[in-house]
Amino acid sequence: MYKKILSILIFIIMATVTQNASAQKHSYYLFIGTYAPANENSLFVYKFNAAGGEARQISAVSDIENPSFFCLSEDHQYLYAVSETHGGEGGHVVAFHFDKKTGTLKKLNEVLSKGDDPCYIHLDRSGKWLFVANYTSGSLAVFPVKRNGQVGEAVQVITHHGHSIHLPQQSEAHVHCTLPSPDNKYILVADLGMDKIFTYHFNDKTGKLTAAHTPYVDVKPGSGPRHLLFSKDARYVYSIHELGDMITVFKNDQGKLSEEQTISTAPPGYEKRNWAAEIHFSADGKYLYASNRDDLNDIVVFTVNRQNGKLTYLNRYATGGKTLRYFMISPDGRYVLIGQRNGSDILLYQRNNETGLLTPLRQRIPVADAVCMEMIPEKR
Image 1 (tube, rainbow, N blue to C red):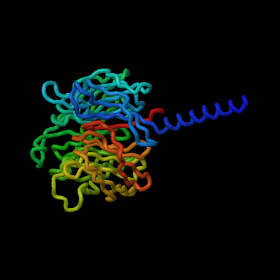
Image 2: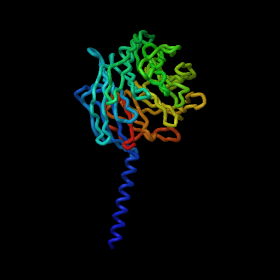
Image 3: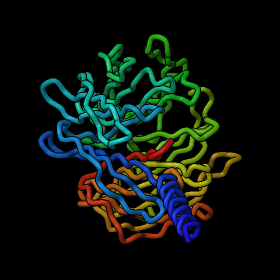
Image 4: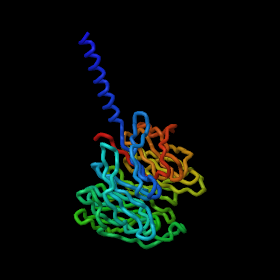
């Protein structure tokens, strides 16, 4: 009798351990940035269960205004967010420490972003430098990251001067993306106001940027380059154009870009206003996803030709959302989470890893005005 009871207890313990291990394997921390005033919760941490697609709020931060874009250190100990504000001192860059045990963010410090309305932030590959895009000021700035995770004062600020033809959005320079190359030797800078993508050589010892021999490539006038992506092998660069509802594929030679293809994110014959917003690759690089705002508010899926980098339209999904901007694909590739700039929640779609196609889910995450998201495993 005793042996039978002991066997049952051992079975229950082993089953519990296995269940907990499985839950941790499919569990992620989900970070969400929003547009919100400093006296309201604006930066959230959720626990996301990929086994069922459920999300549960763990914590929130309420002393940062408009954390519209952020990035995480490689070891996930630190989160760096912009505070997208203007007037007076301009915007800010804020450093947080993330406690994986409690799922909470603790503010370390903040510095001025050296411009108005910072809208993009990215760490270099060494984790020692931050690149920030100040949209309204048309500038980019480089900040050192200290050993304790705090962000230091800017070591360099570069201001663009120029305009293009799509008024009033392009009446002046608007830096919208500052993306370091995979080899950390240069960064690409998308200027929506000037219709140019700039290349700057990067010194990872000093943090200083210098203009490349071919300093920029022009894009179609009035298209407004917004965000950029490198292919896995860095042979190609993909630019989504906010004002021109299109994606351009560039062949990349150490930051020297040459156009290979431009493809629309809108349906054929579509004539209403459409501002494209975000692009992401699937983890295997076979599919590229893009979001549209305005009347479309949809997600577009393209297949990627590995040989020449070109895109082929696959499908589109009308979400019924309000002003889609940022979206993300979960690390396991099974879910697409879609933020609504003017909506009350985050939309969820299930993703087929083989076909790249999406299926809408009923469950949603109740975070309003979500404009940036990132997911990391609960256990590394």
